[in-house]
Image (cartoon, helix red, strand yellow):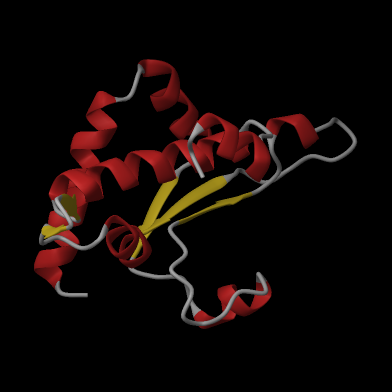
Length: 137
């Protein structure tokens, strides 16, 4: 990933973060947001995913619903993966196919928001079925 593409992604991410309510900003103080180009091959293997997987995000840690006094937890971390998000969004350059626009900066922005809310949902104990019902899968 080029430095320009990385910078562009980070600018769009900052604009998405500016739209979030204060409650979610406070949550990101509890579960810091990390942004990487792509997951490592080791991480994908540990998750049982193929190396070509376009993973967009990851919540690491115990959800709030799993925490207890008996099981103290390290701080959670939410990671967004630039390459997976850009690929899932259809890329930076919009393409019109059968009258539908695929990709473009607006699509990347939407995918960043969906991925971020998806991972925040995991922090609160939502599973993949819950997130799909809410439109964040």
